[in-house]
Amino acid sequence: MSDSPNSPFNAADKDARGVQVDPELKFKYDSSDPAVGADLLAYYKSLLAAPPILVQRRGIAWAIVSRYRDCVEVLRDHKRFSSVNPNLPGTEDFDAFRGVPVMTFVDPPVHTRLRRVAAPSLAVRRIYDLEPRFRAICGAILDGWAGRREIDVVSELAVELPVRVFGFLLDIPERDYELVRSIGAPGKTLYTADFLASRHRYITELVKRRRAQSGGQDLISLAIAAHEAGEKINELELFGMVMVLVTGGISTTADSISGALYQMISRPQLLAQLRANPALAPNLVEENLRYDGPVQTLFRVTTEDVEVGGTPIPARTPVYVVAGAANRDPAVFSNPDEFDIMRDPNDHLGFGEGVHFCIGAAPARLQGKIAIQMMLERFPRLRIAHGWRPQYTVQAFGRGLASLPLRID
Ligand code: HEM
Image (cartoon, rainbow, N blue to C red):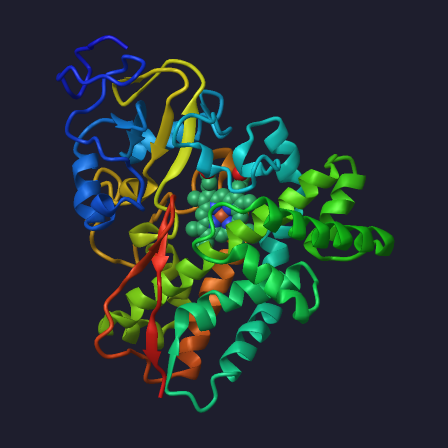
């Protein structure tokens, strides 16, 4: 890339391929970087003030796209911004599944085929029909707290609810829920070959049993039915499907539940508003996804030379799409730093955008709503334990509360 009048910087700082990079922002960008994590909001504000930038990371240029409209442009254009890992320096670790094909890391047409297999089982209608079942699961967790004065809502509800929901959706016996817990554990980003092999044995056995039964309504039986109806999926892809749903669905949902509860309980007026009108719980979930959602960045790679927001980006450049910054873009959200559950519209990018838009949005939204409403119903004096300060478990693409001790007496 030659120096261009559109370039947001002029200093001659070049990467290994001669691509010009911003001299001011050389740290590796991801939300696990302490320099970024220490003051995420200030960092986002500086990003939002400028067009996309190129920074150095492991010797090559990376593009950082953060303004809302630029992010949407990238996420809607899967032809020029691919989800396939290019295996460049620094991107190897993004493939938690070590090459097992999953919908997140493939482009159409393979993506379309894999997604079609899973979509019917997670469709909004079907999931909302399961609401009584999800409520019963949540109720059983809360029943277990009888006599307790304080609980950690992260480990004891926010993680436990999606673990049990997945146990139910996969129709596996409770004694095997540990398997779900181990796959979806927050903080897990790269699985060892041994770990994958042992899960592969278990899931292959499940698939064999489900094939023999036919007619089941669990995620695996429905995927097998879709396969038999023509959406072809092989055994390895089916294994990848279970893994990606469980990994994609547990720690994100957990972070969403604990984050929404934190925002609510730390604001007395908001807590009172939700108590008076629990039907606002879905608004709370949505606003938390915008304000401080579990997924802060998404990853793509350019397939050709492109220009985004006036910044030229060469082919084969890894791109960080900073959805967390876009969600605070004042060009789209008025008073973006205000937590306002009545925001309408609230077209945040917390679930992504385009063909990879979160396939699990319905179960995630439903679990968030149920967790908030049932906590309000059961505990009239909810408050945060004295002296607690928020600390985050940071992952490559997002973050969530490490703990949230609540007094429930
Ligand atoms: C509040 C909780 C959740 C959040 C914030 C979230 C966020 C996201 C985001 C931002 C994406 C887009 C990724 C990209 O474009 O590269 C995504 C995709 C995905 N999510 Fe979620 N997710 C949540 C819950 C779930 C659940 C419950 C499941 C499983 C049932 C799930 C499974 C997936 C899968 C498989 C994809 C890839 C979809 C595709 O490539 O077509 N997620 N999610």
